[in-house]
Image 1 (tube, rainbow, N blue to C red):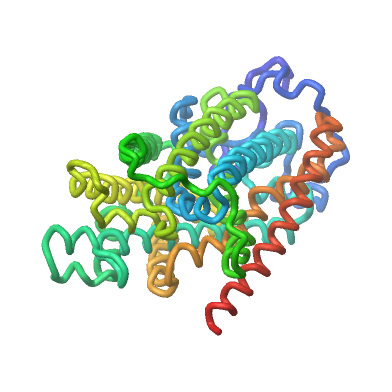
Image 2: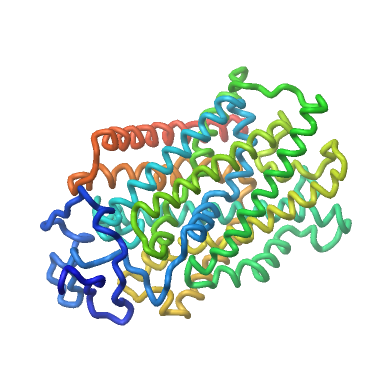
Amino acid sequence: MSKDTNYSSLPVSSYLELQPQNDSPESLRGLSFDDETEYLGSKAAHHDDDFEIDIDNYPLVVIGHNHGSGVPGAVFNLTTTIIGAGMMALPATMKVLGVVLGVVLIILIGILSEISVELLVRYSVLVKASSYGEVVQHAMGKTARILSEICIILNNGGVLVVYLIIMGDVMSGNVHHLGVFDQLMGNGVWDHRKLVILVIMVVFLAPLCSLDKIDSLSMTSAASVALAVVFVVVTFSVAFIKIVEGRIEAPRLGPDLSSKTAILDLLVVIPIMTNAFVCHFNVQPIYNELAGRSPQKMNRVGRITLMLCILVYISTAMSGFLLFGKDTESDVLTNFDEDLGVRYSAALDYIVRIGYILHLILVFPVIHFSLRQTVNALLFEGSPPLSESRKRSLGLTAVLLVLIYIGSTMIPNIWTAFKFTGATTALTLGFMFPSIVVLRLGHLGGLSQGEWILSWFMLVLSVVVSIIGVIGNVYSIQSKSE
């Protein structure tokens, strides 16, 4: 086929089609392909007659007919992937770290996460991978791909379990806090937390999770971002009013090192913060559905998202810590069952809690999308995409929702979940795998010396933080059991 054409040829199959190639030559200037590099392990190299592929003509495929989403829709979906339950744990991390160190770490971790996303996109395009697992396989082999997909499943499954825990705690209450239903209507059947979660899942979450494309969720993602902003505005406004009136003590600026418990908390809090920025598993699906996609365009999406998330996270962490101080809970939403000390306090409490529950309901399907895609890739490798197999899509959705529901009844609180996912799967997906991908594929071109050094830095840092986080978690559990 002529190189002047806007289309490239694809293998004949029931679910691949010709796609416009919107990546401009300038987007990959300075990058070169190694003609002898195997693709995905590579089926072509093993002379599989049923799978003939030309690496130079295999684009990052968008399945089915789709005109793509614009930058705003992509920003909303990526922002929604990031701003979830992790946002509610940040005031508790600020309580451990202090204001100055807390703000600095939010900014640094956010910047490192964005750099790793940009590098991941660049090399995914270079090797023409259509998913996180594919680019990992191209760099490290099939075993690494399977490991990365297991990490995505554990990470996303854990995050969705946390969402349900928060919904149950806020709406039905727990042993320490009153729920919204109790405050509005008194005791009743809604006190049964498991029942409330089940109703939310069946009525709200299941229909949204059944959608086939992540672009279909761009409007709900926009609404979820708006609800998160409402939470930030309310909490920040209340904190500002109380500061002006002199009713808030000066916050601690540095970490608390006065006790063994405080030091243990310090060891595990950084993985929790890294968990709040992990979005890498959804970068590829969002890029695939981006209209006129190119690495530069996706980088613009990532940088806008980064700035928005850093502002939201700093505002949430500081305002929550200022409002509740040493009494800040691991899930700050549960603190909003008390008098805030301002006018219309009760109404503001309801707005904050109900608004954020609606936010999580709208975030849930975005995280579930990549979870379902990854489970499908792991269990049904080589099968047509889920968009062409409605029964398989709905079947996976149903099974995953049931397992997530069961998990939400077994894990005690979000701090426990975030400590372990943050120290393991979140660091692996956000920093370890992207760094290794860059270092292994750097010979294909485009990797500067500074990026090479930064990739090694992220890899070493993530390994060290992960080890420290896991050790801290183990000691923390042992100290509480004694």
